[in-house]
Length: 229
Ligand SMILES: CC(C)(COP(=O)(O)OP(=O)(O)OC[C@H]1O[C@@H](n2cnc3c(N)ncnc32)[C@H](O)[C@@H]1OP(=O)(O)O)[C@@H](O)C(=O)NCCC(=O)NCCS
Image (cartoon, rainbow, N blue to C red; front, side, top):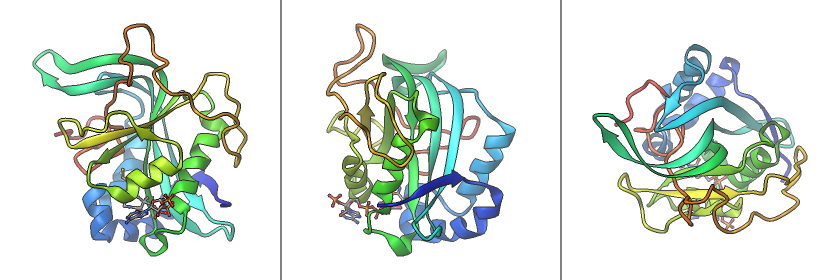
């Protein structure tokens, strides 16, 4: 499917915000304020730390179909590493495992009027194939255990559950790991399939650590500096 990524800007808010009024989008990501807040954070609070990971940069794209019509929105933070987040202690986040990055946490929404036409999968594939994230070794989607649509969408794009059991927040992390030397073309698929297993440094969990991206998962998952309850 032919889709194109363009930067998500304030000009696209009136197009995208109505999508977030759909109860399912509201439930999974948040209401219409969600994309507006994301734009504010992109400019006001770039970088920082989130759940033990350093935010290297953030991407946010509008996804256009072959007719150049916006059909989806996708984006997320690129972190220096991936690590499993187990909660907070007085001294800071409790972390388990470590895996070399860069690692990108992705969150996505498709125009509810266009669901089940392949746009979600196409959007994810376009991100993975984009030269802008050619350095990213892991793509992670933190998906609510009961979000079948998102899980199937992620799987169709090559992200597989890291652990079939939901974590303490009810999230199943779907991850795609790719070799460092895997070349990508804009609009093209990966030339090589992702390998199975961890590429982390010795001692990393065999199944890979996990943690929700700041912009992924349910509405409680928000960008750095905002409530992360
Ligand atoms: C999740 C979402 C992005 C999927 O977008 P989409 O464009 O409908 O997905 P696709 O058409 O690419 O479908 C991908 C796969 O999921 C399946 N699927 C999609 N919706 C489904 C549903 N409601 N129930 C079961 N399967 C579903 C499709 O059949 C397809 O399966 P296949 O590849 O095995 O044939 C869309 O439902 C959405 O925006 N949901 C609300 C926001 C959200 O949950 N975002 C993810 C947060 S982690």
